[in-house]
Length: 358
Ligand SMILES: NC(=O)c1ccc[n+]([C@@H]2O[C@H](COP(=O)([O-])OP(=O)(O)OC[C@H]3O[C@@H](n4cnc5c(N)ncnc54)[C@H](O)[C@@H]3O)[C@@H](O)[C@H]2O)c1
Image 1 (cartoon, rainbow, N blue to C red):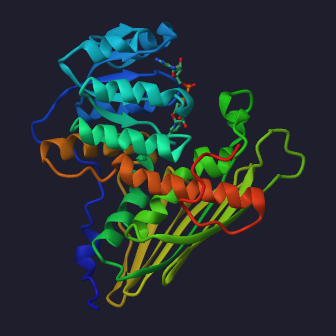
Image 2 (cartoon, rainbow, N blue to C red):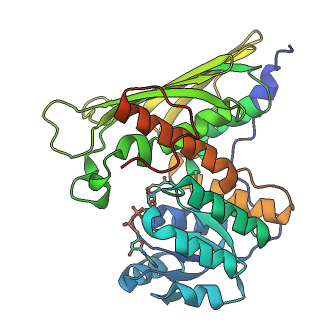
């Protein structure tokens, strides 16, 4: 085992990438709440959004006006798919309506970036993965958390072996999620473990170099006097060969929110802390000493530069995409298993639960 020199740790390249010369036209399907952040990031990165589509056309007009006034606006997604000059489709609808949209985009020969959570059914997701392979298109999933600066730093450090062999990761989110009151999100029973925690199930797999998960055990609870339907607290224990991870979510913390990530490897430990996922201070400790880099950027919107940038770079460089949907199905399998565990009170092996438990 070698210990990474401190300058190697200080120079971890965690920032989002931009292709050298590939600048395809991008079409966006679904112009809802989150796409404000997509388009902020794309405009800042210089990506070329050529068309915006929403069945509620006023939403597409609003986004065009603010970010890409030259873009074509439509309420018919087929118009984007018929346009041969558009090579990449960003699908930002909810997962329930996403499968036929992605399927049509692949059949039209487009590369696709799907919002998360990718699908409600792992087998339906596998069929899309196979279809993309058959049509030689790239199908990627928008796990933008991978480019949140602190997660990105930890991920790249772990992937490059700078922490040695990772054997522990313990992550805690303690924040107020009550903004979902009255939105579609309030109707999602496992809002925390499914819609929110998918980023954490995904990043933990990255820290452990995508090693298979043996089992997961999870539970949920309600905050005293909470009025929202979904349980606002959840926790998960994840078993790896020679490794363990815990995730704790307290989504009813109104005062003094706090977010922490700890990753331990045989050669070093990393601790990142802050009042939110947007604002973090990170320190890596090895035998050589401590490094506390000043992190540039934030989860929103930079994560969306990261995901679209990775998709475009992988196409330009003709290499596999690190956020491809095949890998994402493993993160979703872990997520579905955790939800089934919370429902049954039993530990569950990922892959055995094929659909989002109802
Ligand atoms: N990656 C992240 O950090 C992040 C953050 C928030 C939300 N999300 C995900 O993004 C997705 C969308 O969330 P949102 O908050 O933007 O939802 P939203 O309800 O505000 O927007 C969805 C939009 O899709 C449109 N739509 C639905 N079917 C369509 C179709 N066939 N053609 C065109 N438009 C269609 C709707 O009219 C709506 O405007 C969800 O899956 C959510 O989990 C991801």
